[in-house]
Each structure stands twice: as structure tokens, then as C-alpha cells.
Image (cartoon, rainbow, N blue to C red; front, top):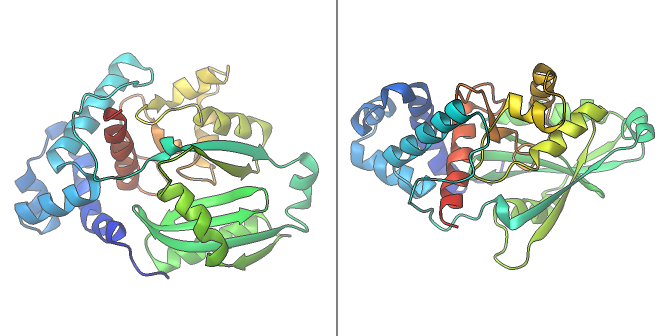
Length: 284
């Protein structure tokens, strides 16, 4: 696997703190309580947490608490942030334009026959990132923490596209990785994602692209947005089967109660993504 980037290393250190903050959010734990759980001094945790997130643990907890409360009380998307604090130069997905392209029914039946898929593993701000792409766009983006998990994701790719030729080639995936995680400050870039799913799933995934940075939706809101208010469970299932994490922002969908669990890549990762995006949105 690639060398761990500084952001990745800090993410590993603060992930336990994030998980603790999420679990104990209703009790508003102090810095000392979180530090004791993680096994670091208050000052050490404060420093590495702030280096990674650009905000302190207290500020992070305040924002997550506030936004979850808004969602619970109002049951619609959160359009603005009340946290007047910034990030350490992190670029967010608002620098990108995401365009989705679905496979045709014939391509779906062929299961990738004649298709070449290049994939690579990279160290990113949220752990290790697995990216797979075709000539038409990114077909898989996932996160993991151990080599075993990375092997499982590679196996998943082969199951999803059994007739395709898969090749590990970080040289080809690096430019796309850089687009996603270190977008330029110039003109907006366009990233195409290649989606394979039922018409209903595609519709749900397209709806997720309309959720802006700094906004949170409930599963009910997603179902409402596609004109299927009674299909909450089906919408939740489609979200769970999203194979292009982060770019198709399923992390912006949480329970109406404000709970952040049920995220395949880990609830602390989900909280981190939401927190960073919301803090970045507050600066605009």
C-alpha cells in the first residue's frame, strides 16, 4: 500500500476521538473525557485534531450537534452554517462539477465485457482510498483502513464487473485522485462517474448530487426529492449500494433523528466528511 500521507496519519489518530464524540454527543463530552478515552494528553489531542480538521474537538462537536438538531427539528436540508471557524487550506468538493453517466441496459447485461478498468490505492485525508475508473469515468470509490479491507474491495470490483479486465495502475488513477482530493483553485473541473444500477437506484444517486456541501438530508427528504415519498426504505437501500463514495455524497444523508450511523465506511469517517464540508461552507 502507498505511504501514509500526513493528513491520513492524523486521521488515524483522531478517528477514535471522532467515534467517541459521535457516540456521546448528547452528553457533550469535555476535551479531557475524549483525551482520556483516546489515551492522549489534552494538548496533544487538541493539536493533532485541529491540524487535521482545522477546528478544535469542541468546535467540531458544537457544529455536528447544531446541524443534527436543525435536521431533527426542521426535517429539511440545512442550508447554512453557524460555525464561524475555518479549515487549514483544505479544498472541498465545491471545486468540482460531478456528472453521472449510467451504463446502458445492454452494457449492464454484458457485465463489463470488453471493458478495461484501472484501479489504484492512495492515501487520502480519510484513510486509504480505492479508485477504479474506465474510459467513461470513475466506477468505484471506496475507503478502507487495512490491507485486508483493500483486498476485499478489489474483489468486490471483480464481482461487480466480472467480464471486465481489471488492472492495478496507480499511474492512471493518480490524476483522478488529485482532482478529487486536491482540486485546483481555478476554473471548476468536471468529473464523470459511471454508475451501474437499477433505474430507481440511478435516480436516487442523481438526487444525492443535488445535496450541496454543508447540507444534510434525511432519508425521507431523499424519497420526497425523487417524487416517491413512500419509498423511504427503497431509497435508503439504494443509498447503501452506492459504489462511488464521497463523489455521490451519501454521507450527507442521515436519520431524521440526527444519528450518523449506518455508513458503510464508518460513522467517524461520515462525521469527518460532514464536519469538514460544513466548516468549509461556513467560510463562503
